Image (cartoon, rainbow, N blue to C red):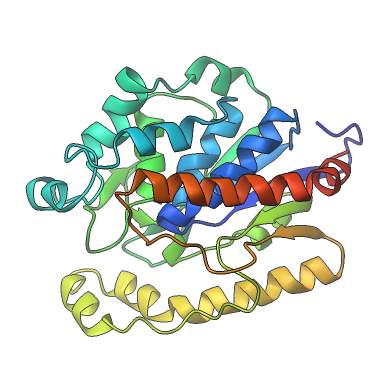
Length: 287
């Protein structure tokens, strides 16, 4: 934790589904080195893996994803056809953290580090920002909502809101984190420098699937514009010294969804190697 109480230092974690194994590798090295930001904000996989930072559990994200990579109870077509969720809502988000790879809720709650996540309001297409102080099943559902990809996930209802993947409305929430007082941020991206998001090719089918939710469909159609504007905002903040950015050197060798444990391990190792390469720079940034 930094000693200058007038400067709050944060971690901003992009999503990217299983590309998030790169982020998890970086976070594991930072945890092992005792680097403690004042707060974290994560989107989708960034939220699902970033919560392990506040609970101080390095290795957990890789461990349970490898263990259940080919388990039909966890994710895949079987889950989608039987539950409506590509990642099984009950098993992946409630059974695993309470029975198989225990999430340390006590440490999560006692750690003064703030934890925020981003969801998308299905009815407005706008971002919902949630600060989570307590662990438990409602918290697991907030994480699930942040990571629930449209079309292959059911809408998550919480606090009177209907929610899906936060990456639709705010993929890289640096601007938001700065707006609430985090003036120096480490941003971890899962795409290399120069990546430009293109319009979704399957947008006609997505509009059909989301025909009862027109604002969500509009947000999906505009997502590439939002994302590309955000990456430019991050570059400008990096040039001005307001943030430090870690990106992979090349496209990560893993699909959006993966059932290959060794593939996950390789991408996690890329993140670890990147963090080790820049560890002194990271340590100095959070000093």
